[in-house]
Image (cartoon, rainbow, N blue to C red; front, side):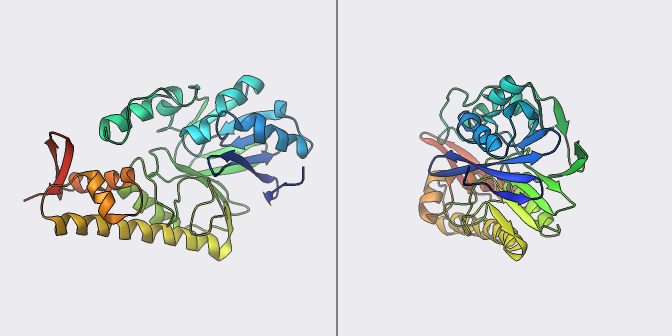
Length: 300
């Protein structure tokens, strides 16, 4: 293969084609092979297996797949890899229910935001979790250790898997960047903020993101660029929180989530929904049932 990308010693990036860009999968080479994220259902045959053969290894050597989070574009390929290899599968403890019940995330999103998420069939095949990890755990891979840093926000189970010796942080969609309708959150804006603040204190040398996020539009960021990406992600969330609040104050009357998004013209409706949920939890806004859906207004 001509397009081989070794991020650090023994760690390779595979760009799994998806939509108009790619999903990142990482191959960790040892006596056996560990994957971090497995892309969509097509990714193993289209990208991961060919890459392995390109570095002189075989798919049959995959012993483990670890997930940065249980969203279909990152875990959709897991069932196929497990079927082909008999590998073990690991995910954060909060991701286990979503991995083992592929329809759970869509049911929850439909319940929270019915105007945004219609009822639909699961988008990946459910898989049993063999390994369940939590914040601070260390996972041993043929003598190489990966430390778990739980970074919720984009999802409840979002985690960075860290090769501390080389300073490599494989973060999936934990760090969303800014611009290009980012950040995209499905879980919690407050927890995303806390995760970004925590990451500003981390000794990141190499940051591997789940997609080529803006503003850099690269999946592998090094040194100051990696640290700057975390700060930009933090600032983007802080600024979006302020903008949503300002719309609510300026409007002075109940408005729909869609109307807030239309007035802002940035980010995505579900992210704004997460911000509204956080404001509701803090007692600053209230949700009102209306004939055409839900409206949001400031509390008295």
